[in-house]
Image (tube, rainbow, N blue to C red; front, side, top):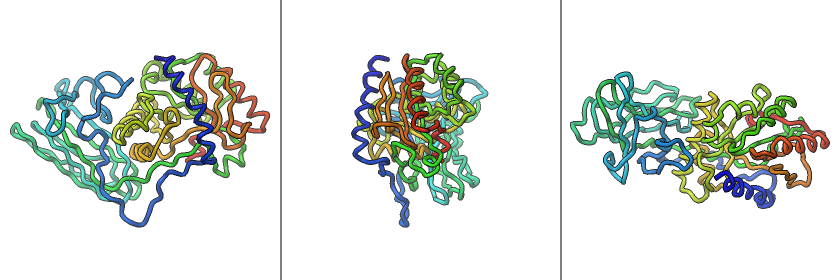
Length: 380
């Protein structure tokens, strides 16, 4: 599996040439207009129809954060389609909550609903900027009942947390056909460099490292010795093996960060928007849970993205889709410019050559009068 992923990741090298035709930024992001955005269903995996994502933790439900071992998807819980959610609280101290976070527009109206079955089932939203009364039912008497709540976001609201849960000692409940109806946020901005004046003035270049199947120890010592702010884009499963490693490689305290790179490393352009959203939001949730910091940047596998990728990333609260202008992976020294320049983003991969790759890129940057900057700080 590792060899296969490495071979596929090499496609990123060729993508530098393709991206070069578009210039230093790829302006595919939408622009906010004066007309009201149409209402769409923003919920991730609202019908519980998306299969478990490849390379995800066993038993995970795409798009939803549920207590381990409590939630399952199957045909027996389906109101429509082929699957629905059933949650069985593990003990008397659990209400069986499942939740997800979705980006929203400030000062906008939304309707959140779901069909449920069971006793004492609750549905609501937090982080809206205003108090939101949950919708709930004492019992659905064995059938399906629609729960609905409405809210208007406050002026500073950018994401909301949607939740479904039962009640203590009340047994299992089911849910299906979830909907968060309201205006979507603008698509994310796609770029391959950091073209902002401050990065150019400060003569900064940006180091980014992808994947995480290999985790060489000498990389940590090199980053720490050189005080490098590195942006890592690890996949979700490798994070679970050795979470502290990626935080150390990012140069904790130097301005580096851990950002999102999908769950399965598939070419997202082969997937519909709904499945892309599950890939990106789940990767965001893994990083948020492990490191306590919500990612803001998304690196698409193989640099492959389309308009749906930009909208999916934005729906997950990630405002920048980042590729690169230079590739120093596995002994390479490829640059679109023919040499490193201020604002360039360099891609590496976690591999047995990574320490040498970083050393080579750092030497080239130093020779060009550049220093390494923290990507996230220059994008905010």
